[in-house]
Image (cartoon, rainbow, N blue to C red):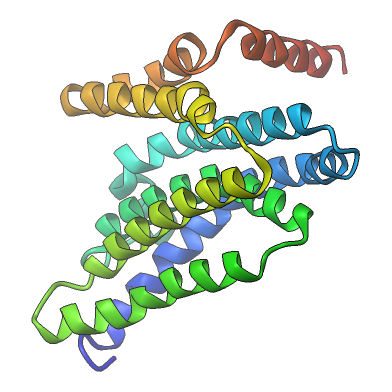
Length: 239
């Protein structure tokens, strides 16, 4: 209210409501794996623990990407159907930046569970809380310099990326988590698929939405992961 007034706060609230509804899909997906992550750590089965963290992180990102890309590309259309009127200023930009934040959080959430399973979370909580809190103070400073409101969402994305990098590094130091293997097997495919979708989106948003699932299967997943997806689909089909 100090910098931008009530109207922009309402826009912020609307964008949060949209993204929270989308994020619930990934939350439900990840909740199915949380007991398994904790179980693997308790059984001292580190190989399975590492593999499950990496796979859940990557699957969560791709699941959300496939679901939210149409909203990212055609936000004006979908929000127009919902609000049935003139869209508030900056709402589309807020939603797109919030989607970017949600995607980075989808990558990170399995590692939150993995770290909590170890029971050694004091330092982790301090560092991540500091990064998260810094968004408020840096945002206040930027607003006092005349920056636009959407910069706080950019700061959210940056803080989320830095927090995830810290989680992965901290887990590597504590448990021997193979950071290089995670970067190669999960982060690299995530970046490749995202950049391909962004490149296609530049020419045709509709084609990007249609191509995204295929890009995930071809470039994002390895043979074993595609087999897992196939088995899940077949089991669902029998039901």
